[in-house]
Image (tube, rainbow, N blue to C red; front, side, top):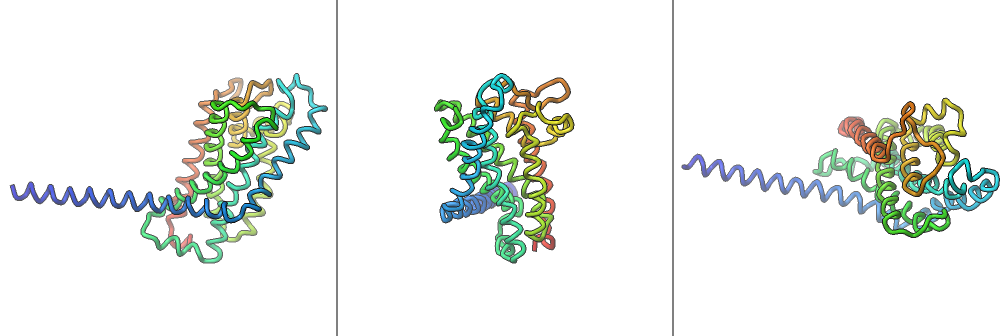
Length: 284
């Protein structure tokens, strides 16, 4: 009887400790998400400038080329075709900035203040990724509110679906950005890497030009480009289009498969990043 009571007490204490530990991890994640929200609110000028580039692309680039690109090749006007790619551009810059901030904090030594907290490294990494995902989605939502500029009607279910897909794309882009960020120590190296990869990945995704109009090797490489799946997912939700998206051989994966590819890519990137982020000597 005494042994049973002792076992019950130990189990009760372990349960309370586990619950308290879970609350502690959630508080750490919430604090990191709140930190990114405060950064976003404290610098509205930077937010406006980040949104200005994709908006100018939509109005100037889309309006200028709409007369040159036949509607029959796209299944609609070029501005409507371009709008999902512009949404992707809107979330790309804030997602990338998460990796830049991580390297800057690591280079300056301020990352140590974060690592000495009692929260687990995996929780800190999730908080950093979710914070970047939230701010990137918020900036994409601002551009999504200007749907008529992309010839998209105000339909609540349609906008909600696009917002959910923007959230998934933001999560994937943030996770992919953190992967090289934990391996690079100098901000200049990371910036150079971004300049070499960001534009080719965007143009090779079909965001601005149909994949069918690009060289065959670019179309083949799009199968390995996460931005191509995000662009195709947004475009197929925004409306029917005659432009070919990503194909696996002769088969075009349905939207649910494309969403699964994005989610799987983000999970693999986070797990890979967590292995390096958990090493004290590497992150100090």
